[in-house]
Length: 525
Ligand code: FUL
Image (cartoon, rainbow, N blue to C red; front, side, top):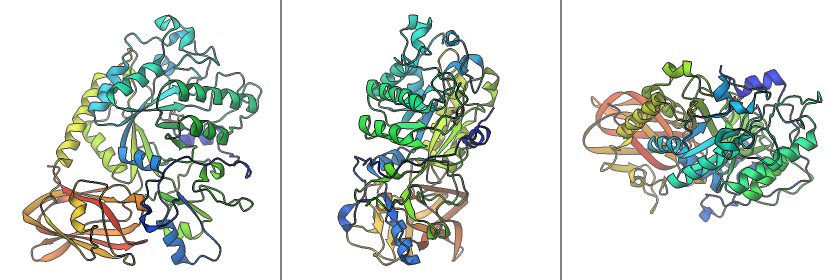
C-alpha cells in the first residue's frame, strides 16, 4: 500500500497548523554558502514591501541564497531512506502501536551490508526510521518500554540506530533520522505538552548519542491520543533541540530547511524553484535583524501546488525563502519490505529515470530501500542498484564539452565561459550584472554525438534562470534541440541523439544575470 503525506493529511485532518508565536526567536547558527563579494547581506529569505515594484521583487527573489547546510545537502544529490521496524515483521505499512514488540526479530541483522550497498550505489546519506507511526523505537530509549531494549533480540542489548550510525561513520556515509511525531503507542500522545516533552527527549537521545546527524525527517501525520484529543505538535521547540545539538543538520518536511516535493513518485516539477513564497510569516512586531530568523517564523505545512515559485506567485508574496525540494520514493511499491514485492523492485533503467526526474529537476532524490526480515537489503534490490550505478557512470563519465572552444556573449575576467566545463562546481561563468539574456557558443574539435544536456546554476548566488534552450548547428542551420524553464542546482534533459560540431546555449530569460557553474553534454548510448 502506498500512503502519501497528503493521504495522511486528508485521513487524519493532520494539517491544522499552529504557527509559532512571534516573540520566540531562534537564530540559525549557520554560515551561508553565498559569495559575499557582492557586499549583499547573507540571507536565505527576503521580505516584500508593499511599495516594491515588480522588478524589485524579481531581483529580491534572485538574491535569496541557500544556507551552508542547504547547499551541502543539495550537492549530495542522492540519498537512501531505510524503512525498517515492526512493520517489516508484520507485513504491514502502518502499525497501530499494539503489535507485540517481540515480533521484531531479524535473523541476521547486518547494518554494514546496507551501508556497503548504499555507498557502492553512489548514494551519500542514509536516513533511518528510528521510530515509525507504531511508536516502536529501534534504539534503547530511556523514555518508553516499546523498544529494542525490551525484547529477546540480542537479549535486549540490540541498538539498530547505533549499529547503522557506526556503519555509516566507518564507510563515510552521512546519517539521518526519521522520527515520526505521530506515535500510536505512546500513552501521552494527545496530551500535548506531555507528549511534546516526550518527543523532545527522544530527539535529544538520538541527536546526542549517535554522532553527526545530517538530516532530521519530519512528516506531519497527526492523530488523536488515547484521551480522544488531537496532538498539537510544538514544532518550534523541536527545531530548537535540533539546532542546539546538531547545528549542521537540515530539517525536512515539517521543518524550515528542506521541502517535500509533493509526490511520492520521485518526480520533481519541470519548473522547480528553490525560492518560494510565504514559508515564513512576516512578523511586524519583531525587527527581522538576524540573518536567519526563519526558524522562529517558519510555517509548517506541505507545499504541493504545481506552481510554487513563478513570477505570478512571487508577486503576491509577503516573504520569499530558500526552501529546496526533496523527492522521496521507494524502490518497491511499499515503504516497508514485503516478500510478495520481490518481483516488483524498480529496474536499473527505472532508477536511472528517477534520477533524471528528480535530481535532474532541481531536487534531491531520497530513495527508500527497505531491508528484509533477515535484516539485509534483498539481492534483487542490490543488483538493480548496482546496475543503476553502472548506467549513470556510463552516461556521465565523459563530458563532451571537455576540450571544446567555449565562448559567451558576455564574459568577465576570472568568470569566463570556459569555466562551465572545468568539472569544478566552485567556479562559474556569469554575464554582466545587468544582462538577463545571454548565449554560450561551443565548438567541438570534431563532430560529437550526444543525447543528454546538463546545466548547473551557481546557486550560492541564488536561482535565476527562467527560460533556456539548446540549439545545434545541423545541415547549415541552427535547430532547437531542447528547451526548459528553471535550472537550479541541476537540470538534466534527454532528447534524440544529435550529431554536430557546434551548439549554442541560449538563456532567454533570467531574474538577474545568469551564473552557470557547470554545463555538460553526454551520450547515453
Ligand atoms: C509517510 C508515512 O505515512 C509513510 O509510512 C512513509 O514513512 C512515508 C515516507 O511518509 O508520511
